[in-house]
Length: 516
Image 1: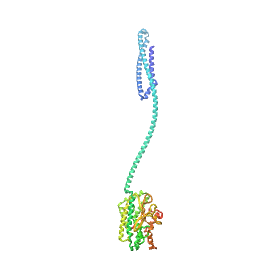
Image 2: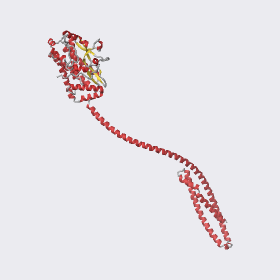
Image 3: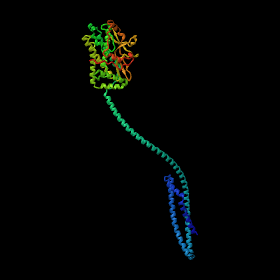
Image 4: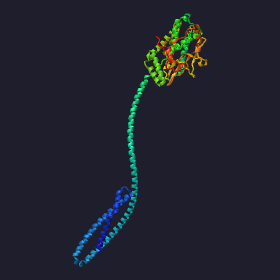
């Protein structure tokens, strides 16, 4: 009976151990250990302890099973022997009792062993319960961690999407940057080529300077003052009587192409007659200098071609002064030696044609002195005009009688045989008007109509009245005034100033024909 209880107890123990091994919580614990290998240090240490306990249980089970199998095998052998030897049991009671006592002792030992195992099992169960609590807490932590991981995963996915977009944008930007680099390289190449070309073009023309107007205006005034001195030294003296009476001797002087407006020229030695001769010769000299010397360039030999260049540059300065400056500088740089020669020839033309018109009115000695004086004046005018040619601004002389309220003419004054410039406003003489521009006004042209910078010198109509009356007295039926030259009527019809016919005549500078 006791042997059957012992066997049953062992079976129960084995069943409990097996049920413990197949328990879901145990499997869950194993799964948790497998699932969260990176739990905190305490969980890892507990896993190690559980592993050790599991090993011990397995070893105990193995030893117990082995012992149990041995006991069972022995029990079967004895039982079979008892069954077969029932008759002999009585005879062997003594020995069996001894054997039973041994069995009882062994059973007691097994009981004690079972109690110990049960105690260990209880301890293991308590540990398992504690571990279950820990696992539950760990599961809650894992759940929170999983939630956090899920949220982080969503954030990571969003960041990945943003990163992909940024990478796409970056790739597009890199492509754009590359295109821009190619375009910049191309533009740099074009800029270098254009800069090289521009430098090459700019090297063709000298650099014009910001000129000081006061310097060359003063020098030009000195030219006109010298002209007054030279002309007065010629016509301030009395003319020979036979020259006064010789009408043919006056022809070249009176019909000079430069006298584009008629003035009275009495054939006498009266003060009024001398004054008109002086005014006329000054006008002829100033116009000849302007025509030949005061040119923007001396690039062409032919005077008429030079007038075309002058007119072209005036038009260009009105439209675009910077372009005019560049064109003028370019023209000045072309064949400078030839231009120097042409400038010298222009001086020679003035020196030849101005004295020529008075050659029959004076002696040979006076003619040579006058010719020498004219040459000095023209040389000085040429030197002064070089300064004007080299300025960035466009300056141009004009003889038109344009009246400016705020910038009035100066008068040609005759005072005790001396000629000078004085007075500022012809309007102060009542019912008077300008008759002839003696020395030209200089105008600046900068992207607009010409604007005067010098007043110009004029002969007033009132200053010619005495000479006109003298001519009327000497020959009332045929007044001998200076007559316009061959082209002066046609010239005057297209050069009339705003004060005469209300039109602008700046772009039609008088261009008398060449003198041969």
